[in-house]
Image 1 (cartoon, rainbow, N blue to C red):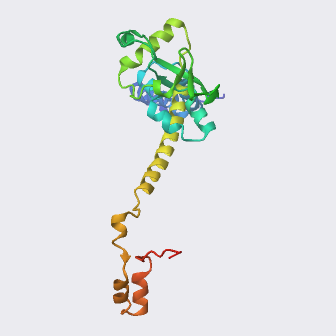
Image 2 (spheres, rainbow, N blue to C red):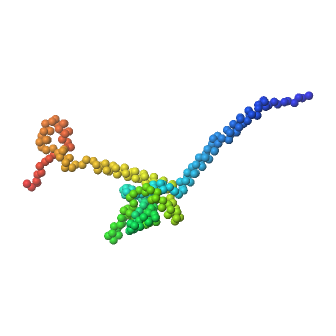
Image 3 (cartoon, helix red, strand yellow):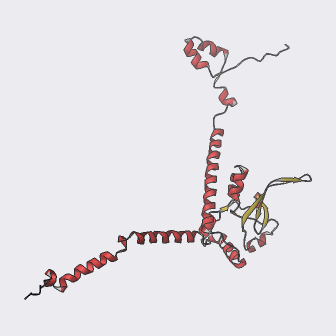
Amino acid sequence: STQPIEIVDETSHLDNSQEAPELEMREEVNASPIQGDSDLQIIETDVSTNNDLSLDEPIQSTEEMKKIILTQGQLKLLATSELYVFRQTVIGAFVRVNIPGLPSNYSDRVFVRIDQIIDIIEPLSFQHLWIDRRYRLRFLGDFEIENIVSLKANHDSDVRPWFDCMEAKGEIIPTLRFVRQKANEIKTQLDTLSAKQTLKELDKQKITFTRSNLSQIALNPSTLRSLSKLGFERFRQVVVGCFVCMTAIRKNK
């Protein structure tokens, strides 16, 4: 008669307490998100999406707003650039203004003096009247450069009322993406123009001929005769570049 074959499990003699840790370890390895590339890609995509969304949100920080508020001196420096570059840099930025004709005792009662530049009106003449360049603001109208505040907005109290006013009117506040892009444009242009201005100032500081220092290198005839006793090459090196004092001769004398 045929005997049934017994299949003996070699691992059957292991205790369940020894097998459990190995199984738990394998489950932990299989469950680790680091093992799959797809999980990592999903995480990176989510992070970039969140960053894009945050850049498109309206700014809430006064520090970000201060970066695109131009002063009177900065506008004057930017005005030295080419016209199309000047317009591209300035339009969209903000300024603080002094409202002309407003009595001094009412100046502190003005709620908002910050507005956005939306256009630049170039100088023009009208019936023998000359009108200087004006900056057209979104809500406050046209202002000349003299009415723009020359001090920086260092305190939150200088900027916070603008946020409150925009919220009360239901107006759109600039996004973080716009503020950072405009701040980068302004900084790049200001740095370039400042470097050019520094070079011009250095050129002005070069030594120019005046009556005092010109007399130090002017040679009279006796000095020339003394120097002529030197060798020709030496005499030439000393004399070339100097000035000489000559007696003025009238033509019709």
